[in-house]
Amino acid sequence: MADDFAQTVKQQADIVRIIGDYVKLKKSGAQNFSGLCPFHKEKSPSFSVNATHNYFYCFGCHEKGDVFTFVMKMESISFPESVRTVATKCGIPLPKREFNSPEEAREAGIRRQLMDLHEGATQYFEGMLKSPEAARAREYLTGRGVTPETIKTFRIGYAPESFNDMRERLQPHFSEDALRQSGLFSAKEEADGRQGQMYAKFRRRIMFPIMNEAGKPIAFTGRAIEENDEKGRPVAKYFNSPETPLYTKGQVLFNLDKAKSAIKTNDFVLLVEGQMDCISVYMAGVHSVVATSGTAFTEMQVRQLARFTHRAVLNFDPDNAGRAAAEKSIALLTEEDFEVKIVTLEGGLDPDRYVKERGIQAYLAALRGAVRYADYLIERARQEFPARTAESNVKAMNYLLPHIRRMPNALQRNSFALDAAQKLGIDSGILLQEVKQAAAGRVASLPARRAEPVSETEAILLRALVLPDSDPTRALAAERLSNNPSWYEGMAAASLFESLANGPAPDNPLDAAVDAETRQILARALGRGSGDDAPPSLGGRVQTPVDQVREALVNLETRGLQRRQRELRTMLAEADRRGDTEMSNRLQVELVQIMRRMREL
Image (tube, rainbow, N blue to C red; front, side, top):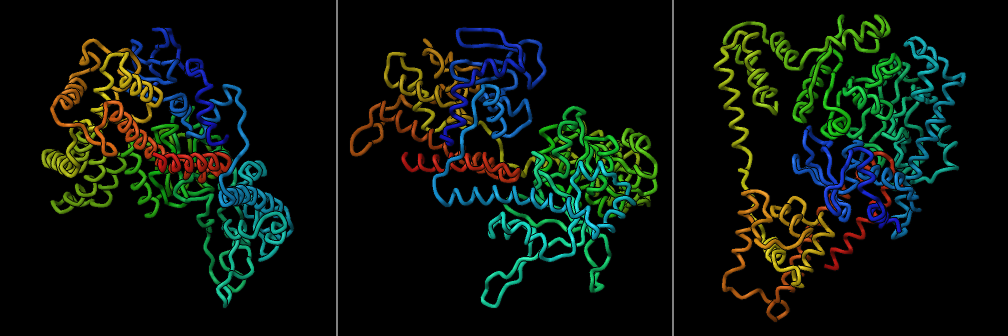
């Protein structure tokens, strides 16, 4: 069954063999293997793999999870991709898609059609670029230095002037619903409220396909080759696909499909604004380059890049919009602990023109000369507020403070502040005090963090787990918790559940605690059950210890299902963004199964 596929792979996968491909493991017990943790630097092995429970845990950095979690972290891939990767390593064939309802099958069919439709549209545009009508477009591309190789690599095409030609060619192969949802066509609304005949949204434009991470076209950018339309009205230079079931602007980076391998290998990403900038730099040999859609840059895109690197070089246009985009990007990247540098090209040129006019070697030299973002911002403050007056200093300080506050490290914040004070002629004591007050205000605005007390559910299960091994109450709790570690992930008693459920009951219950905090948690849980209060009733009768444990396990399973439900919805959005209809269908099936299970509990 498709909905059981991930679980089937997990059960059949030899986690020791899979992890052993990445980490040198040595046997350290009956079912345990250990090695040096791949997620942090260490000299003594603290990374443990349990073959029985298919689980890994690092006692040093506390990374943990199953075989899919490990592969996701090591390969910087999504959950669906990790399932595929593990299945491939184990020689498990991918199942055929199955659906729970006609509506689910229809929705999956529409997404599949949209993927095929965008591929068909890309081929149509590619073919039209060779037509006589596209002579002006070919002339423009040649003038911009775009070679036939570049056209082929990026699948550049041309949208002709016709309102109907593309529709007529695609209509026999795709449903009207898919055509209307594709974002490639517009339609006028009829008097009765119905949508009229569709016509091509992109016309007389050079077409740049926007690919998902798998390299499949999911949207387009059209570049006008004329400043005015046939009626003499000015036209927008660039025109993008609207958001569709396949495409969300803030979740896609142009060229990431081609660049991601180089980004990971070179451990840096070059971020530019325009698609032509990206194409020119990529074809010149800098393969770690991606582009935003105009000046938009989002947290989702930052998280995408964080899967491959935490070092970014920004090369945006030197105009006001480009500077504003750079500052916004710096803020987003800094908050995700990126090392950020800025390139400012001589002559106010964009990357495309700079490469063509001065050559790739000059551009590489400019990249090597990229400055720290702190230096860039200080220089911006000097340019914006050049007068060294008290008023100007206050404005410069207020400009820099938000950026200083975002730095996650206190030493970095102080270093930035001292450097800015020296270069701007501001009293360093005053600026440091402002930084301190700003940081204090930020901390004060956050909820106070404290050790989370164990819930009654956790307390019931902990009391059961310290009973003798022969006790059926302990056997029930240990068996269910051992087989379902995801149920208690993130809970205050998680480490106690981990050790007590997967080993014999200790002679002294407090020996199960690994540190003072968990010892205190366990002591409180055991003490909570020592009073004379009558146990809660169940259906009009007094609950037995086994009844209490069963109810606590239901509560825990419900919590785990709710968390998995949230994860699935996030993964479903990611699968849809990538156009991965096969995985999207599987996730939807699992989501339905979880909702059904929650209704049963």
